[in-house]
Image (cartoon, rainbow, N blue to C red; front, side, top):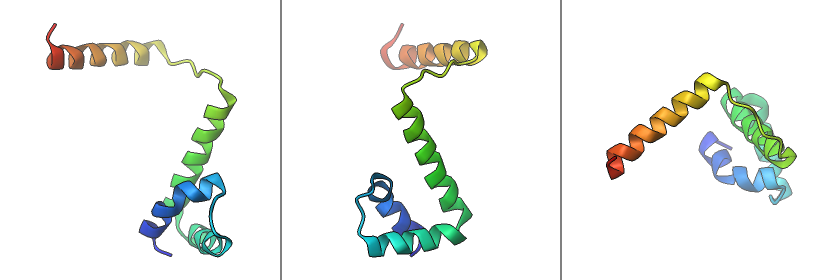
Length: 80
């Protein structure tokens, strides 16, 4: 299995809705491909955080920066 093939089947793999044969190829590829391991690990962590439903507090500096960026983009698109 190549990286492109893995990415095409990623959703089914994470959901557990994948043919066992394809799953074996998927796991063989993951065993030897660090970039794909990182992608799958990040998706698993994202799903876990989402399912736990706990808010993650943003640092005040990030919050202010995000708000300013969103306001600027809104004004550029819709005027302000």
